[in-house]
Image (cartoon, rainbow, N blue to C red):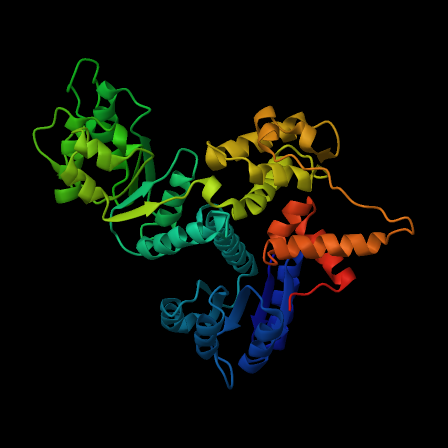
Length: 455
């Protein structure tokens, strides 16, 4: 683990030198300051993560320096040096934010031990920060790839509702990313540090679903030798994600309604109810309104769930997102299989954009995984596509040109083709590039080459 830079602040030059020598022997890098003003300059220029400062110094003393560090350099750890007779002042310094203190005359072995502990704390803080950043990258709304208007409208609503505690119902076809959106809502909510518990209501047999969802007491039924908490109880304080809520049996719909209305659950075999504090996010690909008409879903439960309804668009309705999404999934997949030099042909992206993707993002991810795993060369090209996607790709018509006897300018033909393609799509570069079976970067290069600009 990398050792941090330590700033030692004391008006006693001999003490500074001894502390520096001791800490450098322990493997640390050390900067020295004779007073608070010098310390501030070093703090600004070198940003040490650990400061050891005497309390009593002429001019800006240790308490002033501590207050400045807490206000301007919150991640910096401060250790106080104090005389034995002023321990009470050191305690006040710790209340003001100091990590620990050592007394004079200094026991240098004890000082090194305190510094080691402070360094471990700094490393832990950094690990937590990195973990938080990784979670943000994985579960933040930025992790949902796409810039199309239908998707951005959903993400904007989701980001607003994340800050509230309302129940959310996410509707979308299979594979559109309903659980990913639910996780992003939870992660960006005040409950983000609490559990996110998921249960697929359609993946568990009906006779086991109640026990899985609400739990049971000891002796509730044959084989119940010990009590078991359900998913609702495990999500207490956090978020419960009910995937495929349309598959929930009618008898459990009543118990879920009670949970939403009163915040209470009743375990199997229990004689009393217990209170829980959970936020519920539900998701389904089914038409719940039609199920209500058929008597298969409770209307009162529907309105409790759909306080904020969100509709995730299918991939075929946001084709503009397919190139970015495909490149993102391709980069992630080839990194997982350690194939950094593998490339994805623009023609493959064009074929992706022509396919309807009934399985949505999940199907796209699976197709890319298959192509990467089976790739034999350095580039994935149209022959590597599954047959159903190749068959859906539009066939290019042969271009008929009259070739004059006196010759023709290839540059002129290219310029004319570019101009016509751009005009065909109202100068939308992405659509024109797909039409010409080239990348958008190549299109821009050739536009600059021929001086093509929209007036």
